[in-house]
Length: 77
Image (cartoon, rainbow, N blue to C red; front, top):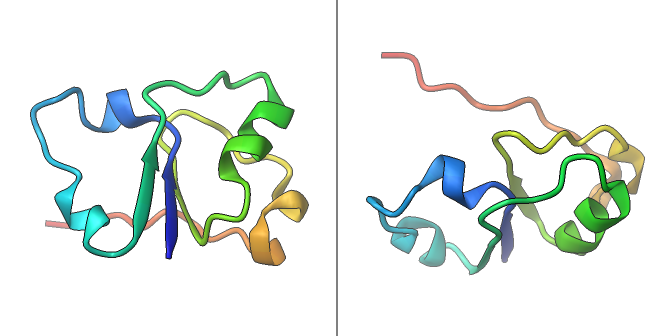
């Protein structure tokens, strides 16, 4: 499974491990993704099955793999 993390720095500024994701598949982490460059966002996503974002907007969901955009999951304590 291919996993892409578009905003790695805001989600993990270095104090956590990506090991949990790496156990699920091949992980590519981009510290920062330019939010106004849609073509670059699409290039980074490529054929990933899972895309994790914090700040990067996914506005053109028709271009995403599988043509499906899921709402973020939120843990409720």
